[in-house]
Length: 153
Image: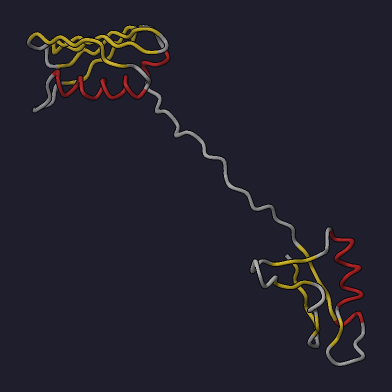
């Protein structure tokens, strides 16, 4: 990018131009050294004579590039750090082993596991998963007013 400031109008037509066929900007200048030289030769005052110290220029260089697309971050869950994880969640009205299972099923599938089997008997539910890192067992049961959740990997 080039910025020019002058106390009087300047003629910079020879410095750069738009191509008519492609509609793109064209300049034959490469680097700051060539730019300074071109400015001292090409910048012509509209009204002669104009002292060289009555105008100034500044340049800035930018690279325009596409940002790399990164994969969305995988959520981390506390059970991913250990082989056997156990948690107790208080029972709330309207919840049951299936609603608790749905939450942990989502977590396991987020981590690359896929459901192999699921069994439910009353207030107990167990499920088996397979993934790239082996198998995972999910156990959920309602005991004494709270859900016990255990994941073995």
